[in-house]
Length: 125
Image (cartoon, rainbow, N blue to C red; front, side, top):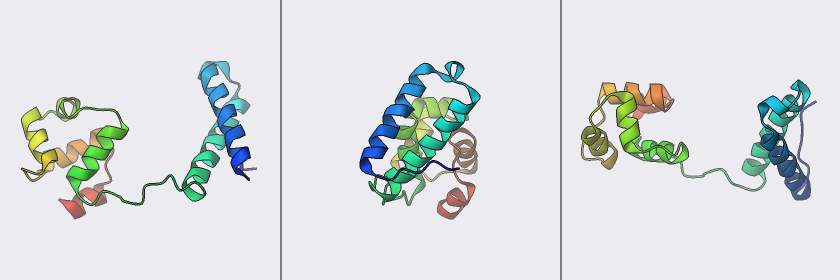
């Protein structure tokens, strides 16, 4: 049966349980506890989106906006991205700042390294 959060109080109790289990580490949890943790985190995310309104209403509409958001979410620098996709840092910087249009190798790198949605990349390239 799927875990369901019924109230704000229940949400806070669930978050405490999630943090307690996460602090134990994966190796410190049984298979049942790991399954329960996965269900609780999915339920908490759903509650945050549906009830607390923590989901972003403004989705990026350009590739540079998407890249800036993805880098922030992954706590990654432009330099690290450039290194991982094998491009000069200056080129990546110019694309992200909007001074240069993204090319195919850059788009492929975003898809591979940041798991960018291919449809989004093609529609906005």
